[in-house]
Amino acid sequence: MRDFKEYIAFKALVEEHLPDFLPEVNAKSSSLYEAMCYSLENGGKRIRPVLLLAACEFAGGEVREALPYACAVEYIHSYSLIHDDLPGLDDDELRRGRPTNHKVYGEGMAVLAGDGLLTTAFEAMNKDMLIYFDDSDRLKRRVRAAYEISKGVGCRGMVAGQAADIEAAGKSIAGGLLDYIHLNKTAAPIISAVKAGAFIGGAAKEVLTALEDYAENLGLAFQIADDILDVTGDEDKLGKRTGADNAREKPTYPSLYGLEASRKRLEALTEAAIDTLAPFYDNAEFFIKMAQYLVHRNN
Image 1 (spheres, rainbow, N blue to C red):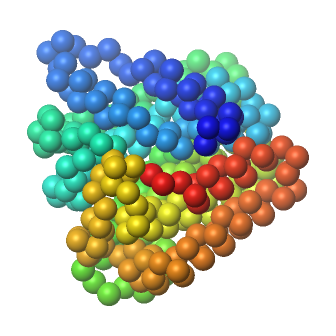
Image 2 (cartoon, rainbow, N blue to C red):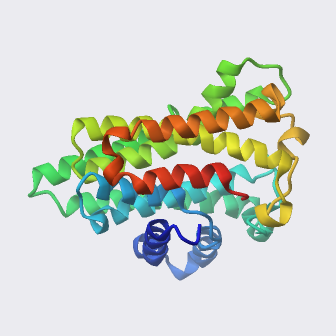
Image 3 (cartoon, rainbow, N blue to C red):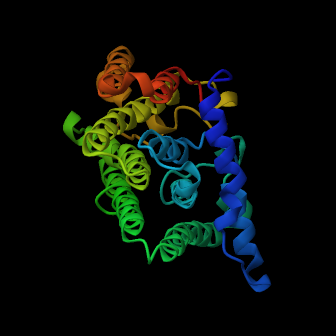
């Protein structure tokens, strides 16, 4: 990862500007703001906003114009992790090596911190749209980007996958349902981030289609890699306990197909993601490196 200079540059840009779109909070609500920032500033790979910025650039757009949307998807991702860690869902005590939000601020404040980050994401995107009321083309791009993000994390995307994941725990399920869970819970926010960046960049139809196919394969591969790491990973590198999925009887690729078949599926999806960009190989080096990194990561 150290030689992946493009990723490092995009990630640094996101982290530099993450505070820019947080609203000013009244001192009487300072605990809420602290809880929001606690999770937002707790590191992470920033995969979704980085992919959004990269897609914007790939489509021919100006990266800095996409920053409100990149930060918005990271706010949404942070909210989802806060809520995932709650006792009613995954009941995790550690996230990236630190106590989870509810362990520091209490369950009630953790719920509100997640709510605050989610609503801040839409505030940031809508505020950006207001700037372009006199430029209908650029405004339309932003409306489409915000719509894609909304759809990808809502009840037709991430939330739907989370609901199906809860209901499937402890049950014997078919592979089709497991793919539905993974494609919605994990892949949908990745797809929506990539499409949002492409829209802001003014992507041509063939570019948008290729990026969407890439993101779908990448998103499913990403979750399968997580499933495998929960079985084989190093807790110190992961920053959280391993074996949690098995303890909660959650359906995963290894539990349904075994580790060897899961690894083969991961490799196949990675190759498929890369192959979708074959017509654009001269300009797709970032996306190829990203897919390869996500296969071989250890956290």
